[in-house]
Image (cartoon, rainbow, N blue to C red):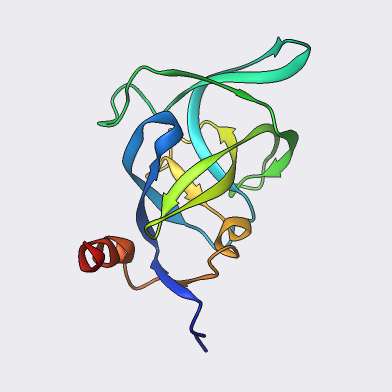
Length: 151
């Protein structure tokens, strides 16, 4: 049963990553995934001022939102992740901001190649607890309706 503070989201929602100037990206809401992941390419770790950092390009060049921007971030973590096909890989994790449901939240993303997937972003349970959000798998883009009503 839904409580007053819980917010309903669809199985796909539009999000913004304002820190990196990416807006209107489709994200799959995946309650089966614990962590959130982000499609990147040319993921390269490096050292900056004695700290571990990672550089990457978000999305593919053929994606409408691709902006050729090389992003550099401190590595928040590196850990093992089991993908939906059952394979385990070590991934780098970064922290950034996400605009979701008309609010700005902190989010942790694992960086991975999702080129074979329909959606470049996957939002997992760890983030969904922040809302807290409830997923209605029969709907898409519920948050767009909320934005329109609040405008």
